[in-house]
Length: 251
Ligand code: NAP
Image 1 (cartoon, rainbow, N blue to C red):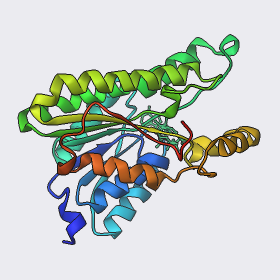
Image 2 (image 1 turned 135 degrees about the horizontal axis):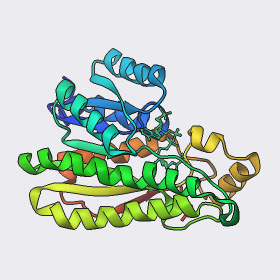
Image 3 (image 1 turned 120 degrees about the vertical axis):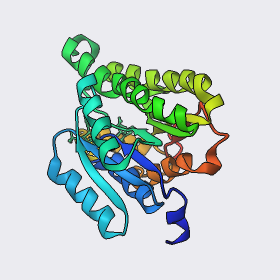
């Protein structure tokens, strides 16, 4: 075992929405540091299997777990299958997220509800599902992927910005509630990151995002994953209730 693999060996991690993008990079990085990783996905089994394949090929341990984390039945399924294959997660990364951007007058109730359930309710449901075992173990790491949009919102994203601000407030409240059990709860607030989510933005918005970012480029998923992995390590034990911005200077 190399020294970085030893950092999280013996720990199970669950990463929601890990079939691509930021979740995929986090799953690979946690596995590289020795965690056994449950790679959650909703639709794309082939993509999730490819992430698991890459982890196993690199000497790690992982399995793919289908489940829609925006509803309680999906979350129950994901946690039951994770416990059966790898044991209860000591590390939970709430990463699954979607956008349904639009100006308020055109935003439908469905656009609002889809973003709220996928991006915010999932964080509540998964955290609750993970807590019992973490409390018993008196150790846990909960890492929520929020967004800079939850701090400095853009027009056309009222649903997404509200959900991401909600994640940050949830993070701070939960951190206070469970800090005495050696469970930390932190949020990461990325700026623009090169994933399918930003690839689908209109070219004009991508260009504008790049111009507004002092680093002059979008971030890489691996640049979010390195912070997520740090927050999962034993040595991050005294960091909790934070929303850490990773945005190339945007904010
Ligand atoms: P992405 O490339 O679109 O990937 C989203 C992932 O979430 C996919 O694996 C998708 O799986 C999964 N997912 C969506 N809904 C789900 C559900 N109900 N249950 C389970 N899995 C679900 O997105 P990304 O850019 O990597 O974003 C990851 C997170 O970072 C999100 O929370 C996003 O809001 C946040 N973020 C992204 C950026 C950015 O610039 N990219 C910036 C700030 C914050 P399926 O394909 O199988 O549905």
